Length: 259
Image (cartoon, rainbow, N blue to C red; front, side):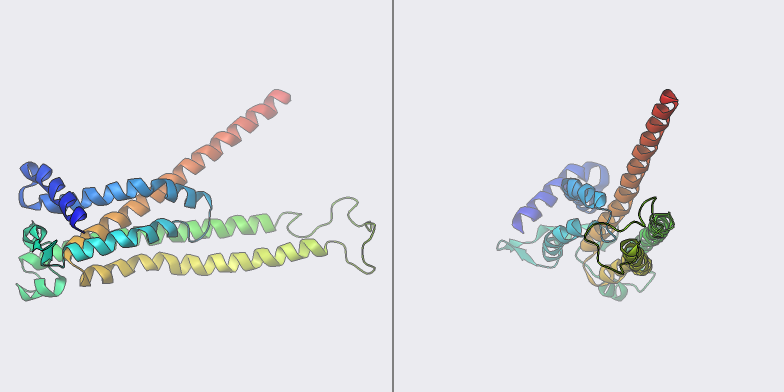
């Protein structure tokens, strides 16, 4: 933890000429961005997996970082010495303070209370943005699965010659039985996607509850990493769609050349 404290303190000193008393808060944001940049290859790999829970591994790897952040702004001493980070602020609110403490220092709309309200508002905007994007992505995935199941192969229509019994086939076996099994699995997958699409986006709002009980510095970390996750996923989706359009254009050009 002392290494983290030293790193954030040094980043704060670099930013202090520009941001004054809020330099350490900006250093926390910068530190979070550096962590997410380091985890970006894992996020990209998880996105390629196209699973409903893509990105869970980077989230799990951030838990130790969040724990260190929490401890750094909750402990009066670090390495046997006074914790210098506790004296830093974001505007009027100390970075080590909690929302309940801010309420006792001037109420909901006091100087410190307004800082926390601003933090909660920003987290709510990011959570709503994430929820909307998540629902759209889940709906698109379900629609793609439904369209795939609606194709002749997905409906279990036999291909020419498929009605002929294969050597070694069991008597009484129905043609297209295997295709029917595919349809059943597809229906189950669509139902799972629909349920996850309705639940997973709402988990973003759980960040609000966490931010209300942890130190302000940890709340800043949560805001930054959540916003990064949403923006990163949008960027990866954009790159994927652009690559797909490029592939389709290339295939169309090849078809025209052959014709």
